[in-house]
Length: 142
Image 1 (tube, rainbow, N blue to C red):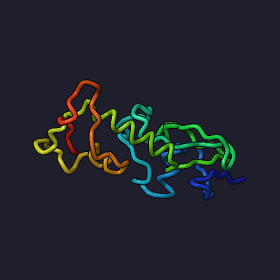
Image 2 (tube, rainbow, N blue to C red):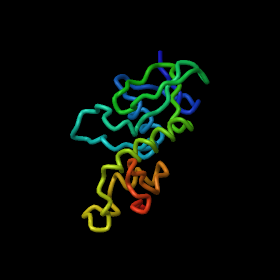
Image 3 (cartoon, rainbow, N blue to C red):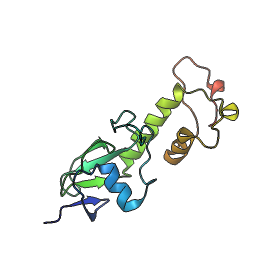
């Protein structure tokens, strides 16, 4: 019997051993769920959590944020890729990453070809929040 799971309330067939990220990418394309630490030469380990999605066991039921890169798809689960909560989570994660990231993008050799810039734009981060004590005039646009 075929196993299915739901992505944003639409059913799709599961392949054995598939992670949520693989499942979503197979059905919606590579760029549907943003990632930072996903690299073909590394085993998935969920370090950055940017690929988080909400997963519920029943439609509209309580959902838990899961790192999609290393979480296996569970039959009959409901995966929500862009809930308001997940969008806020991703944005907060990127803002935290950027607080420690040097913002000299104009002199960086990967400027305009930078995964962090791409993901920041995708999740809606335009400004960097600095830790308490920094001058608000030091705020830079990315």
